[in-house]
Length: 152
Image 1 (cartoon, rainbow, N blue to C red):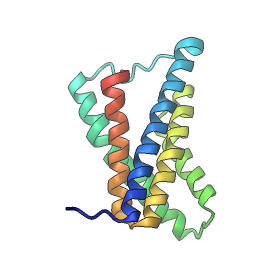
Image 2: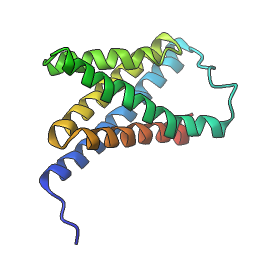
Image 3: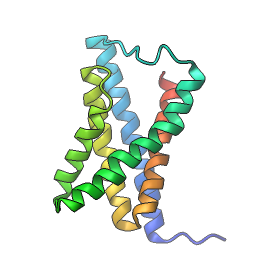
Image 4: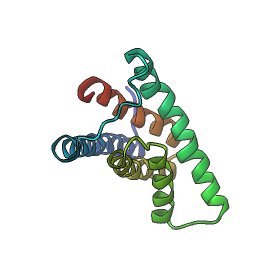
Protein backbone atom coordinates (compact mmCIF):
# COMPACT_ATOMS: atom_id res chain seq x y z
CA UNK A 1 0.00 0.00 0.00
CA UNK A 2 1.24 3.48 -0.86
CA UNK A 3 1.65 5.80 2.11
CA UNK A 4 0.60 9.35 1.43
CA UNK A 5 1.85 11.95 3.88
CA UNK A 6 -0.12 14.91 5.15
CA UNK A 7 1.85 17.26 2.89
CA UNK A 8 0.92 15.19 -0.16
CA UNK A 9 -2.74 15.07 0.84
CA UNK A 10 -2.70 18.84 1.32
CA UNK A 11 -1.12 19.35 -2.11
CA UNK A 12 -3.64 17.00 -3.74
CA UNK A 13 -6.46 18.93 -2.07
CA UNK A 14 -4.95 22.22 -3.29
CA UNK A 15 -4.65 20.80 -6.81
CA UNK A 16 -8.33 19.91 -7.11
CA UNK A 17 -9.58 23.04 -5.33
CA UNK A 18 -7.49 25.30 -7.57
CA UNK A 19 -8.49 23.36 -10.70
CA UNK A 20 -12.16 23.74 -9.74
CA UNK A 21 -11.71 27.48 -9.10
CA UNK A 22 -9.93 27.91 -12.45
CA UNK A 23 -12.76 26.10 -14.26
CA UNK A 24 -15.40 28.24 -12.50
CA UNK A 25 -13.42 31.37 -13.42
CA UNK A 26 -13.35 30.23 -17.05
CA UNK A 27 -17.11 29.74 -17.11
CA UNK A 28 -17.75 33.13 -15.48
CA UNK A 29 -15.65 35.01 -18.02
CA UNK A 30 -17.03 32.94 -20.92
CA UNK A 31 -20.56 33.78 -19.75
CA UNK A 32 -19.71 37.49 -19.43
CA UNK A 33 -18.28 37.49 -22.93
CA UNK A 34 -21.21 35.64 -24.53
CA UNK A 35 -23.90 37.71 -22.79
CA UNK A 36 -22.36 41.18 -22.67
CA UNK A 37 -19.34 41.63 -24.91
CA UNK A 38 -19.26 39.07 -27.76
CA UNK A 39 -15.52 39.55 -28.20
CA UNK A 40 -13.93 37.30 -30.81
CA UNK A 41 -10.85 35.20 -30.17
CA UNK A 42 -9.85 34.14 -33.67
CA UNK A 43 -6.06 33.97 -33.21
CA UNK A 44 -6.13 30.19 -33.35
CA UNK A 45 -8.38 29.82 -36.41
CA UNK A 46 -5.33 29.41 -38.65
CA UNK A 47 -4.13 26.21 -36.98
CA UNK A 48 -5.73 22.78 -36.92
CA UNK A 49 -7.60 21.35 -33.94
CA UNK A 50 -4.73 18.89 -33.37
CA UNK A 51 -2.13 21.65 -33.37
CA UNK A 52 -4.23 23.72 -31.00
CA UNK A 53 -4.68 20.72 -28.70
CA UNK A 54 -0.93 19.99 -28.50
CA UNK A 55 -0.05 23.63 -27.98
CA UNK A 56 -2.71 24.11 -25.26
CA UNK A 57 -2.11 20.84 -23.43
CA UNK A 58 1.64 20.32 -23.70
CA UNK A 59 3.63 23.25 -25.07
CA UNK A 60 1.97 26.30 -23.46
CA UNK A 61 1.77 24.93 -19.89
CA UNK A 62 5.42 23.85 -19.99
CA UNK A 63 6.81 27.07 -21.46
CA UNK A 64 4.53 29.38 -19.46
CA UNK A 65 5.31 27.64 -16.16
CA UNK A 66 9.03 27.90 -16.81
CA UNK A 67 8.77 31.59 -17.71
CA UNK A 68 6.01 32.94 -15.44
CA UNK A 69 6.51 30.78 -12.35
CA UNK A 70 10.01 29.29 -12.22
CA UNK A 71 12.18 31.99 -13.83
CA UNK A 72 10.10 34.99 -12.77
CA UNK A 73 9.89 33.79 -9.16
CA UNK A 74 13.66 33.25 -9.10
CA UNK A 75 14.16 36.74 -10.53
CA UNK A 76 11.84 38.33 -7.95
CA UNK A 77 13.72 36.53 -5.18
CA UNK A 78 16.99 37.93 -6.59
CA UNK A 79 15.43 41.39 -6.34
CA UNK A 80 14.77 40.54 -2.68
CA UNK A 81 11.01 40.95 -3.00
CA UNK A 82 9.64 39.04 -0.05
CA UNK A 83 5.96 40.00 0.07
CA UNK A 84 4.04 36.99 -1.25
CA UNK A 85 1.10 39.11 -2.40
CA UNK A 86 3.36 41.42 -4.43
CA UNK A 87 5.12 38.40 -5.95
CA UNK A 88 1.82 36.78 -6.94
CA UNK A 89 0.56 40.09 -8.35
CA UNK A 90 3.69 40.67 -10.48
CA UNK A 91 3.74 37.08 -11.75
CA UNK A 92 0.02 37.26 -12.57
CA UNK A 93 0.33 40.57 -14.43
CA UNK A 94 3.17 39.13 -16.52
CA UNK A 95 1.20 35.95 -17.28
CA UNK A 96 -1.92 37.87 -18.28
CA UNK A 97 0.03 40.10 -20.66
CA UNK A 98 1.10 37.00 -22.59
CA UNK A 99 -2.59 36.26 -23.22
CA UNK A 100 -3.59 39.43 -25.03
CA UNK A 101 -6.36 38.10 -27.32
CA UNK A 102 -8.83 40.75 -26.17
CA UNK A 103 -9.16 42.78 -22.98
CA UNK A 104 -11.64 40.42 -21.29
CA UNK A 105 -9.38 37.44 -21.95
CA UNK A 106 -6.51 39.32 -20.30
CA UNK A 107 -8.65 39.90 -17.20
CA UNK A 108 -9.69 36.22 -17.12
CA UNK A 109 -6.05 35.17 -17.60
CA UNK A 110 -5.04 37.46 -14.73
CA UNK A 111 -7.55 35.85 -12.36
CA UNK A 112 -6.47 32.39 -13.52
CA UNK A 113 -2.85 33.42 -13.01
CA UNK A 114 -3.60 34.52 -9.45
CA UNK A 115 -4.83 30.98 -8.81
CA UNK A 116 -1.94 29.32 -10.67
CA UNK A 117 0.70 31.42 -8.93
CA UNK A 118 -0.84 30.92 -5.50
CA UNK A 119 -0.83 27.18 -6.13
CA UNK A 120 2.80 27.32 -7.30
CA UNK A 121 3.95 29.14 -4.17
CA UNK A 122 1.96 26.92 -1.81
CA UNK A 123 3.50 23.78 -3.32
CA UNK A 124 6.93 25.42 -3.45
CA UNK A 125 6.75 26.12 0.28
CA UNK A 126 5.41 22.65 1.14
CA UNK A 127 7.78 20.66 -1.08
CA UNK A 128 10.39 22.15 -3.41
CA UNK A 129 10.89 23.99 -6.67
CA UNK A 130 10.87 20.89 -8.89
CA UNK A 131 7.59 19.54 -7.48
CA UNK A 132 6.04 23.02 -7.67
CA UNK A 133 7.00 23.37 -11.34
CA UNK A 134 5.84 19.86 -12.21
CA UNK A 135 2.47 20.16 -10.47
CA UNK A 136 1.87 23.66 -11.84
CA UNK A 137 2.45 22.34 -15.37
CA UNK A 138 -0.01 19.51 -14.67
CA UNK A 139 -2.58 21.93 -13.19
CA UNK A 140 -2.26 24.27 -16.17
CA UNK A 141 -2.48 21.35 -18.61
CA UNK A 142 -5.53 19.94 -16.81
CA UNK A 143 -7.33 23.26 -17.01
CA UNK A 144 -6.49 23.64 -20.71
CA UNK A 145 -7.56 20.04 -21.37
CA UNK A 146 -10.91 20.71 -19.70
CA UNK A 147 -11.33 23.80 -21.87
CA UNK A 148 -10.46 21.90 -25.06
CA UNK A 149 -12.85 19.05 -24.27
CA UNK A 150 -15.82 20.83 -22.73
CA UNK A 151 -15.71 24.55 -23.47
CA UNK A 152 -14.22 25.17 -26.88
